[in-house]
Image 1 (cartoon, one colour):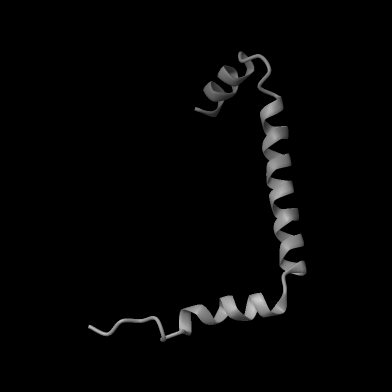
Image 2 (cartoon, rainbow, N blue to C red):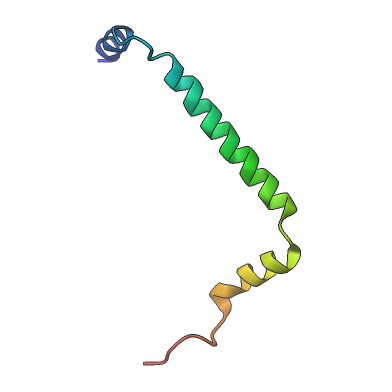
Length: 61
């Protein structure tokens, strides 16, 4: 089956750019995420980490 897919992909002109574009998108996304994690404020991280444990907004049925 892989041989069929490879032969079909070889017949499409200009397809060699798609792996490069996908690698760039992947790389840029994770570099931006890495940058955000290290530049996020400690107060914001602490407040977001406590949201699941906050019972003030829960309604009792």
